[in-house]
Length: 120
Image (cartoon, rainbow, N blue to C red; front, side, top):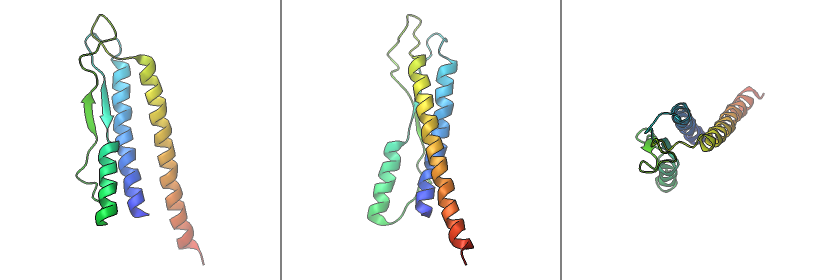
């Protein structure tokens, strides 16, 4: 269970970073030549979990979410900006839903621990 919580905590931190990046993209949607960014962490987390399955050792301390400029050569508008505000709003909603689900999951994990510890 504690490894599950470590994975959830890493995911929550990465989703918080993603939330900030999406908000930055939205805030700069009208800035000429601005290029949107994206946060990638799912693949490195998946590799760490697969490594845990084979070695029994879960070490998330060395992995970090990666921030990349997305489609740097693509522009939706004449001014060079490549932010699609509607797409970013959908991403923000999806990210918030993932964050809320994971936060509820970790809360429920700790409730189960508390229930076991308080049982007589």
